[in-house]
Length: 307
Ligand SMILES: [Zn+2]
Image 1 (cartoon, rainbow, N blue to C red):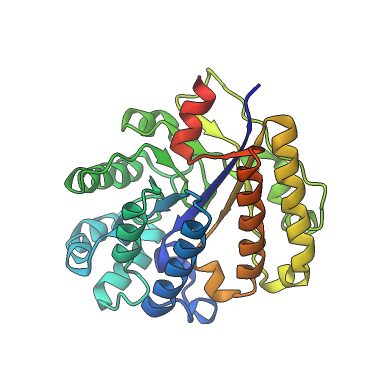
Image 2: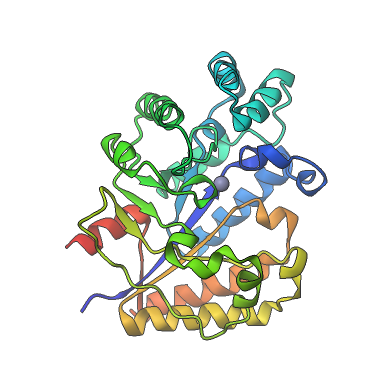
């Protein structure tokens, strides 16, 4: 029987991911706070020998001069009434990229042999309601950059967890993705349920299910590590820790998956999250030493479950 698996995927995007609501809530996200938080996560993972899947928005991995080269092509989509590109274009036009540059974090993750996955080109949602021409643009421009960087990218974390265009993306060379939370469980479309669910300390792990029908392998949606901000601040750290302890125990017992995800910048806007993160990672490291659980990246999961 196969072992339980722990997977950590990080949505790495800086301000690209919040381009449509830049304001008071994102003010603390800048180059210096990003640099501090990415180093912090890197240190915790290195200390416990844990490998993660860093899903980067492609333009977040590029330097300023390279990003600005896309100004014209992004502008051409605004004429097609695309709201997302309007926000991106405004930023490129103002040339203030503080909080938008993640090249050093990408190079650091690559150097430490973490998996680099795809989180869109500009973080444009890629779900069913998005035009095919946009998905093609986002994928093909990213593929060109992967080639320049000699990077083999095969896993997707969909921006906003909005899953779509699997056939097209499968044909572009991607072969595994993290399921959207709503794809996993309809109850999750209710925000009150999502907060209440954080109190469930008997949360089970998630089973991998293979499906011949989809053009790509889908991994369980995993669970967001509680971000103690807004109503989520009411959830004590102790509850979050017990919840994850149960998910991990359940993964070993059922040969299932404990998939954790969050955005590194969540730890800038809610620093308390670092305490739960560190204690859970420590717990995982002990379970790994005891042979109770395996730590696999998304790419490794695909091979592990395919055997
Ligand atoms: Zn994102």
